[in-house]
Amino acid sequence: MGFLNFFKRNKDSTTTVNEVEEIHVDFHSHLLPGIDDGCSNLEESIENIIELKNQGISKIITTPHIFNQVYPNTPEIIEEKLILLKDKLNELNIEIDINAAAEYYLDEWFCNNFDKIKLLTVGNNHLLVETNYMEKPPFLEQILFDLQTSGYKIIFAHPERYNYLLNDFSLFDRLFDTGILFQCNLLSFAGYYSPQIKKAAMYLLKKRMIHLVGSDIHKIRHTLEISKFKNSHEYKEILKLGMLNNSLL
Ligand SMILES: [Fe+2]
Image (tube, rainbow, N blue to C red; front, side, top):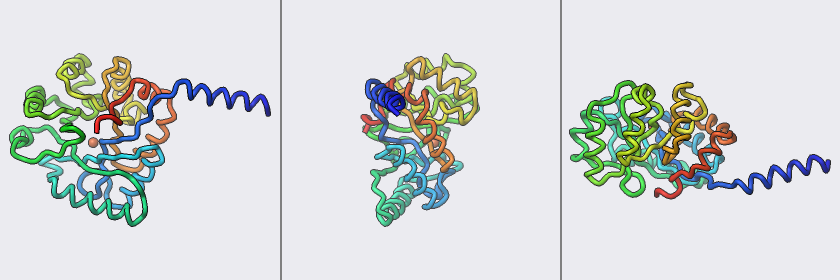
């Protein structure tokens, strides 16, 4: 009995010594019902939010896709769904600070229209963007520069997931040096998508080239996988690096 208590105490004290700040803010997810490939209905949204709360998340900025050809969402559509979700959370007495922005797909439509439409931003004029997964858009550096000179601070969603970056790690450095923020997905470190994506995520972690982490939750299987991942050695390494999640807003 005493022997077991010794180990328990020792384990607890080790945790205290190495204590690092937990992440309480998540701002990459697809929790609004029925407007992209994320949650299909309010029940799914609620199920995911309860699990996120269990993980210690107290503030969520959810980010539906805005991708003109596939998910032509607008600030009005997003606001309407956010109100529906907030009403349901109130009805169920679930306390969570939740708001919405968007994840913008950088295509030609976006390049031609970003200065004519209202963009939904996170925190202090931060804009979450993604690109095609397979091919590097020829205009990538130009649109990032145009957005920056228009006053936006860019959060580049899951750099570790793009094939064109997996084939050329030096491009990570070039993009990083432009001053954009790298947001890696927790599921990438868990090996959820592929061994290659995990390798790229671990490369960025080792090189300390990560500013933020996100859940990028679409479905409950993602949220449950992240709950498991939060007990891992890799997650502790991410926390030690010190993410901007809690301080960006
Ligand atoms: Fe996403």
